[in-house]
Length: 109
Length: 112
Image (tube, rainbow over all chains, first blue to last red):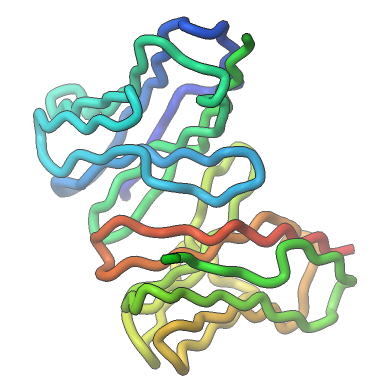
């Protein structure tokens, strides 16, 4: 079946540091891939998505590229801020939405 | 404002006492679903609904019921809650199954 594996946290960074969260997936078809973000005390919200191979999703300075050859969708941001502290979920949609376990990111001033 | 609302936001109950968590969306979405979030497991789908009167099981449906009598509402029912249902629950909706899902703020449930 389909599954998503993302790097375990927690991740703690200083402001302006580079952030990478690894995500790999297993799917039988050609899924759409997503990153959702959950800020403290809130529900999940879509951060970015990519619907086919080599697509790059981007939003709020975050980027992720759909890599079919490595079945990956790593999330990156070049310079994080304190306001980026949240839990990040990688997800795939192949007739059903499947989430990774989530990665907690804390950015310190 | 487009939103998904859930009530209650926090609930402490005892084993076996029936409870209902409500979910409502004002975006005229056809697709709605319930998830539970547990540490280290991410979100797992409990039930989903493609439209009014159309519901189906997700990955972890045991111990839960749902109904979809109106398009905007999708309540989650725990007929006889048990401690292993202690979790954070999210309702979500989207215009179609494959479109971006909008999540509610979550309901934190503790079953003693």
